Length: 363
Image (tube, rainbow, N blue to C red; front, side, top):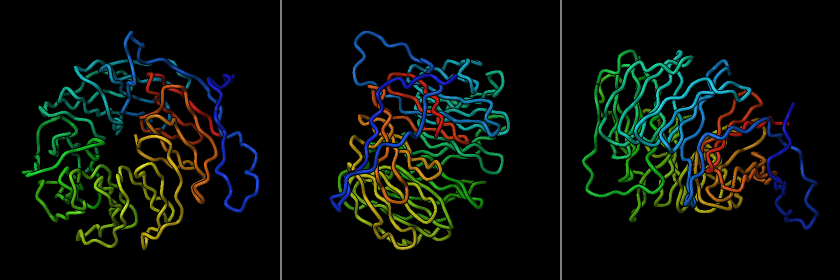
């Protein structure tokens, strides 16, 4: 049986510019269950869960890391399968591939665990904080550190294969490092000096580099996404950029202050910028629509059917109509939502800043 919603969900619609009354609120989802993963301690104030859940391809497991250094694996009904403790916060979505969970930790280690049991298979000590989502390419697990290093290790053993580090003269990250992307035998990485690089997946050799961040104090590129032969990037100094995947040539660049997250879907580039969600035409960068975010940009954007899901540190999980930008619903559990939501079919898993994992069933 589905549980009643945990809070009064704000089902709001953006005012129509034509002066007509907004449509009636829509029932978009129900809360199937809630699982408390982090105990609230005295003095906790404005804490944030920066990671997010991963769902294995069969949907039988959902794995999420939390700020207290635990990885949790749950079944779809919310029952706990296993837990594993690291020595630092888990602040990124883990990778699940071929029955193994790969998770980077702030203790500087990349952990590989058996999906069904949580048994530790191997550990790689990068000696730098790992707070990004790993990628799998050519039998290698590749992950970016928060100190501008990309590490590649063998997926089967955890043995070091290569690493790439930029010698930065300047650069400071605001919203954390971008997760690497992989395509066509290349790994694409972003750095805090505003540079994007394509690396050979087998060797780590640089194939091309492109500086995309406008001049400014905070040039860090905090998000990358690949779609239709293009690499899209969000640079915090103020740009959403489209690059040719093969050459790194800039195809278009649009000025948006504090650009922090980017996603491409069905011919549109969707981005979280300074206080706004924007939709741009993938081919030209021309604005389709923009809508207020109501809170600082947090985890990655996700698309579920016709809806765009956007987490905001102080504004909860916001449901927009992807085609128009109309705000349809907000899930605000009272603590805000900073983590990236996971989607499997019509089920959404989202971790609140209070450390509660919620399972939502879309209507």
